[in-house]
Image 1 (tube, one colour):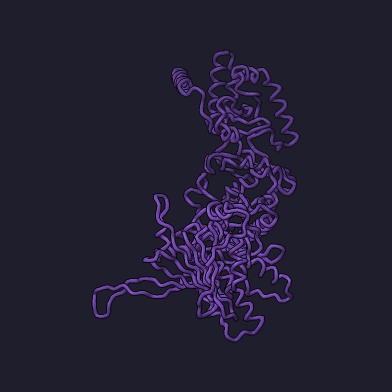
Image 2: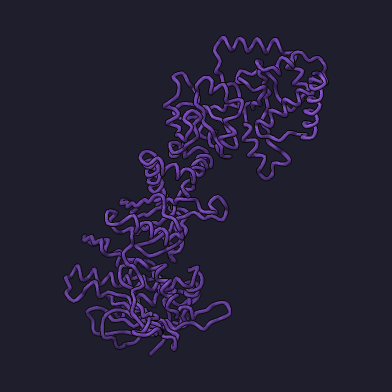
Length: 635
């Protein structure tokens, strides 16, 4: 028996294949099972096209055998097998794939057999065996031929090929495992339950049964004692849930699959099961969780869908398959058309990915829109958990995703006293209304008490309450909805006055110009203006921001790192209610120090209403005490 060298350019190439391509050594089992599945597919295809009566799909099982004494692991398939030339061509030449050649022949054939899938394409999967084995033997006999051949190799030094004996067609691959080291425990691949777990993880949906003898403990008859018995078990489920017809799958099956696969203890809120045919065909089984995971809004959370290729697990978190604004969706994609790299562990960044992501994005949007329309209760439950992500989607895309996401947004309505959509707000607007009015704050309760809300409520305009930090940033990116611009009631003029009211306001500002200037001077650069308010009804004062950033945006930005040295501030305008007794008191004041004290108190009061801290709490407290004492003395 003579040793032959591999037909690769150098021994270094094999070393690269063994040590560099795959991230995890356990991948070897997936690759060998995939090869066995391919061999079974080829024979099944031959039986279909040539009407072979001695081939039954039920016989095309894949067997795994463990020999702890020999420290060997054996995989047996009953597929097409290989003759001498094919063994030499496929195993003697690195990166030569019989599966790829077979697939190319299938493409040329006029027969379209959807029952045949070929997993392996690159011809390097077999060499993953050398990551865990010091020696590999391949005993194979091709269907319809008499001779069997044994291929044997210890890696870089080459291989031997000789005649051998084998009773039936198919291939038997035996791996003689490496010795354990300080860093690697190769004995784990001789453990029944480790192998069972790896098959479940990577090859659960291979279409042929993967069989292995398992040791189980059973109670003896008529005794309380237990004994170990060996049973042959099928390790894989074979039929992926997503490949079955939706009409044949119960809600319980979907729920159990989700909880088992994605480690959740609650049923999903929504199941999306879709199959897409086209330039890139794929099946997708997606789930919207009923609750946000504990770490969802932290950096620890990883988005992504599980990726399968023809039922074989490829990777766990394929982030490229799900857009950021739908990162809460869990699930999987199974495609036979994706371009994978030679290790099948990494996706190639190409057009196919964008096509799949785009189709998944549209499907999720459609399902959410249907839920909003037909199942409002569940949609509001979804929105409570993940509505924030939709807003971030508009903001982080600089408004590019506005058209996709804006119809899904919901806000609390002052008039309706419940969550409504922007479309619902616009449908109930007054005829002459130009803006979508909103107010921002820490909570619905606090916003409802803002002085600026009074005028809107008095005139019967609805008001949207925005309580999330991202809300105003999202609104800035949207700019308008159905040609209606957004208007912050605490920023700029509301322009809700009649012509008569405008004239009266202008008159009061002019008549009290000196007083207003005195207050502005007393407050210095704390305010950009002081004026008579048209928006206040019962409250004495309020703060309004000038054009630019709003008060809520200032609060959010001030919490961001790096803002200490160059903080971004909203321009503050102090508005005073001309119909409040405090206005008359201010008009009668002549003492500059008293005007200064009152101005500061009113300003601090307005700050507190807006949720800002007063600059000097002690001085604020002392001034209130002084006024209380003076009021008592005046009595």
